[in-house]
Each structure stands twice: as C-alpha cells, then as structure tokens.
Image (cartoon, rainbow, N blue to C red; front, side, top):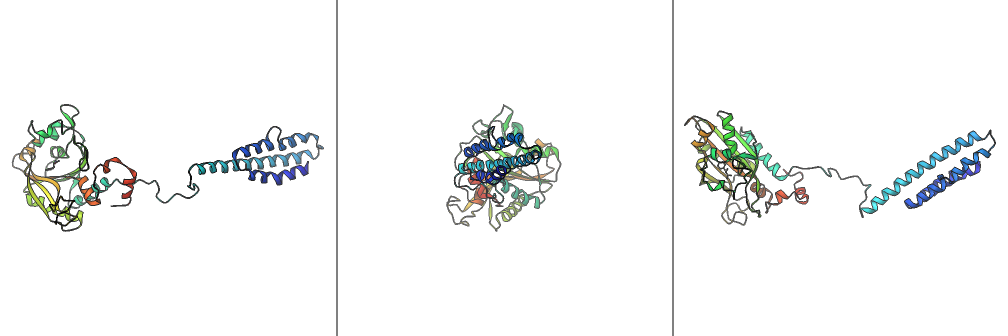
Amino acid sequence: MKEAIERLRREGPQRISAAATPDELEALRVALLGRKGELTLMLRGLKDVPADERPALGAELNRLKQELTALLDGKGQELSAGRDEGAVAGVDLTLPAPRGAGLGTAHPLVSILESICDIFYGMGFSRAEGPEVELDYYNFTALNFPDDHPARDIQDTFYISDAVCLRTQTSPMQVRIMEQQQPPLAYVIPGRVYRNENADASHSSEFYQIEGLVVDRDISMADLKSTVDTFVRLFFGAEEPTRFRPHFFPFTEPSVEVDMQCVACRGKGCGVCGQTGWLEIMGAGMVHPNVFRAAGYPDDAYTGFAFGMGIDRIAMLKYGIDDIRLLYENDLRFLQQFRGVQ
Ligand code: PHE
C-alpha cells in the first residue's frame, strides 16, 4: 500500500500535466478519483491494512486526494482558458491590456463646445442651458416672428403639438434669461437644436449652436464686433479678419451674418470656402426692441447684442471633417481619432 501511494504521488501529477484536452482530463479524473478510481480503491483497501498503520496511511491518502484534486482543477482551468484563446484567433488573451484601452473620450463636438464656452467665460460671460422641447412661444412668438413666418412651417420645425416644438435655435433662451434677470447680463447658451432637413454632407436634422447674449445700457455694434473678433482670434489662434454682412433676423435689428477669412486659403479662395475666401460663422445683431418687450423690460432702457453660431461647422473647419453626418453616427472608428485631441 505504501508503495502504491508513493507511485501515485510521483506519477499522478505527471499524468495530469500531460492531459492535452478537457476530455482527456475528465477521463483521468475518473481513472483516479472516480467510483472505481485508483485512489478510491486504495481508500477502500484501508480496511485490509493492519489497524495500527491505518490512521497514518489514511491521512496520507486523504492528503494525496486533495493534492490531485487541486492539480486536476488547475489543469482544467488552464485547458478551458486555452479554448477561449483558440476562439479569438491570433489574439494572446494573456497579454496585459494596452494602457487606456476602453476609456471613453469627449466627443469632438463636446470638446469644441467646451473650448468655445471657455473663451467666453474669459470675457466675463456666464453659461445657461435650456429645454430642447420648447414652447412655440419662446422659439418664435417672443422672438418677434410673425404668425405666418415660413420658419414656423411644419416643413422646417418639428412640432410636438400646436404650442410645443423642438427648438430650431438656441435663441429662445434669450427671452427665458431676460424674464428671470435684469441687466447687466452676458451669457453663452450652448445646446442642441433641431430642424426638419434632409440629411446630406452639410445638413443634419440635429445640430449644435452656441447663443450669445449681452444686455446693458449703451451696448453697441462695436461691442459685438470686438467680442466676435476676440473669439475668432482666441479660438482659431490667428488674426483672421472678420466681416459683417447685412442680413435679416426677426429678433435683431440691425442683423448681420459674420464671416471670417477662410482658415484654409487665407482669403485666396478654395474648395472649403467655395472660392469666396470667407466662411460664415454666425448670425448676430442688436436685440430687437420687441424682444425686450416680450421679456418685460421697459422700453428704451437697454441695448444688447446677440449671436448664434453653429458648432458643427466650426468643428468641421477645425478638424477638416467633410461630412456633418460623421458627427452624429457615433462610429468609434471616427470618434477614436479624437482621443486626446483638444
Ligand atoms: N438663431 C439664429 C439662427 O439660428 C442665429 C442668431 C442668433 C441670429 C442670435 C442673431 C442673433 O440662424
């Protein structure tokens, strides 16, 4: 008996480590520890051993059983891990993960949005955000849109009901802020807006704007111009000239569209700027008296300017992205390019 135990102690581990498949290992487990297994039979044979040797041999056998069980379990894990490894062909699953693997990263639109807001914080602006599902009143009526204005048309605006829509612009926050607060005030209001557009490389039915609003006594168009120029200089990092073109918005008077010199060609004319040398970056103007009235401000007490810029276009310019839809598809192959980019 003693010899048989010794032999099993020597050979058992070798046989276990030689098992090459989970099936072989299972067969070995039965051969050693099964009901008629080698070790089981030895345990049963204890009754034939002289009584004074029985306790020591019994203890020995139990220890051996524990050792073999542990070895069998360990080998089993090794073999099934090997099976997973085989399933992911060519990948060594035991390699440590690359640093930072699987960590998320800010979406390029979010990092642009935050860095734009940072620039305005530096100029003393506060930040506000408002509802994407908005009353028609704030999105249009309070902003001096006549009842029959084409922008209210269901073709441009997603209506939830007669009185409720998805905001088509961040401008409704102008009135919401002024209802709550007396001048002086300076706010940036970033957020998502919606228009019923057919998607193509430069149109998406959802996109981002940042609204700006400054109201005080004696705010002038010159303040607007210097604010815009400062923003362009700080954001694009160069002295790109800007220009104001007369335009029309119901809620500003006068209204302008602001262009900056094309960052790609420096004004010479190229594909990015449609050969004009200029890129449109925002709509802006002086707050219309009817908007102050809607907010409950006394007539002629204050002046202010407002602007609204599309973030998507700015992100596309900054990163050289040629299709706006890429920004909304959340394809990781696209997004991962912006890991660590500011
Ligand atoms: N809300 C306007 C738009 O979406 C932009 C704008 C904002 C114009 C503020 C003037 C003042 O086109």
